[in-house]
Image (cartoon, rainbow, N blue to C red; front, side, top):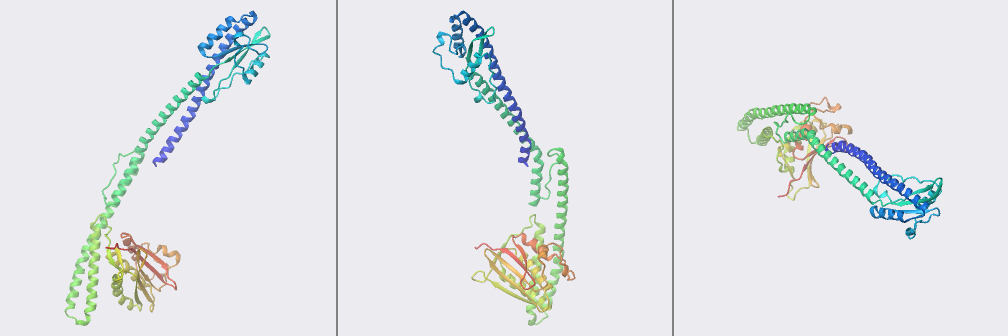
Length: 464
C-alpha cells in the first residue's frame, strides 16, 4: 500500500514539475537567446552607420579602430565587405574566409534583403555560433554589408546555469514531496499496521490486544472501532469455549472414574475367561482419560497446538483395529489390518500427538463401519511413503461422488444418499482440524471397485 501511495502522489508531482520545469526552461533559454540577439542587432546597427560613413568617405582608420576595440572588449569579430563581397578595410584583408552559410547571407544582404534572426533553441548544446549580416544602404543603393560573428559561450553558459538552477529546484521539490508522502503514508498506514500487529497478537493467543481509538486519520477511526469490537467478541467467544471445555473435561472425569471403579469391582467377581474383555474395557477407560487430559490442556493453554512426539503407527493401528473388531463384527463386517514397510523392528515412527492420531483413526473406522454393508471387508493399512506415513481406511460402502469429496471434511456435511444413517457430520471435520495442529492432513479418494479410501498423512519422526 505504501508503494501505491508513492505512485499516487509522486507521479502527479513529477508530471507537474516536468511540465512547469520544461516551460520555465524553454522560457529561460528563449529569453537569454533573445537578449543576446537583440544586443547583436543593436551593435550591428551602430556599425552599419559607421561603415556607411567610412565607405562614402573612403577612410577606414576610424572604423578599424572601433572594430578593433570592440573585438578586444567583447571578443566579437566584425567585418565590413564592399559590394563585391570582399573585406573592404585593408586591415581585414587577411581575415578568415567566410563559411558558406555566412557567404550566402552576405550575398543576400548585398542584394538588398535582410536575413532572419536565428530561431531560439531549447537545449544549451543546440545554441551554436551564427553570424548576423546587415546590408549598408546609401539611399536605395547597397554599398556593402556588415558581418558580425559573436561567441555564444556567455549566453550558452547562462542557459546552462538556468537549467542547473531548474534541476536543483526540481530535486528540492521532489525531495520535499517525498518527505510529505513519507509522513502522509506513515500517518495513513499507522492504524493499518497496528491492526496487523493486533491480529498477530490475537493469533498468538493475546486476546486482550486492542488499538487506540485516536490512531490515524478520522476516516479510519470507525475501522479501528469495529476491529476493537470484533476483538472483544472473539475474546468473549474464545473465553466461553475455554470455559466449556474446562467444565466438560472436569465434569466427565467424575462419571468416567465411577465407571472405571465399577469395572474394577465387577472384575473381582468374574472368572479368568473375562480377563481380555475387562482389560480391553480398562484400556478404553484409560484412552478416554487421555482424551479428557488433552481437552483440558487445550482449554488451559493459550496456544492449543500440541507438541508432536514419536509414536508407533503400527502399534496404534493394531490397538484401534482390536478395539473396533467386535463393533464391526456386530454389523457383519470384517476388519483387516496390513502394515507395510517401516523400521527393521517393524515400527512406523511418526511425529504426532498420540491422542489426536487415535481420535482421527477412530473417526475413519467409525464411518467405515457405519456405511459398510454386511458381509463386506474394511481394510486398515499403515505404510510409509517417502518422508511421511499414511494410515488408510478403505471400505466397500456407497462411497462418495467426485464432486462430494471436497465437502466431506466440512462440518455437518452429509451426503444426500446417506442422510438417513445416524450421525452428525462432525467426525471427519474434527479429525481434520486436530491433524492440522500437528502438520498432518486427511486425503479422500474414491476406491477402485467402489467404496471410499480415507488416508491420514502424518510427518515422519526425526531419527534419534
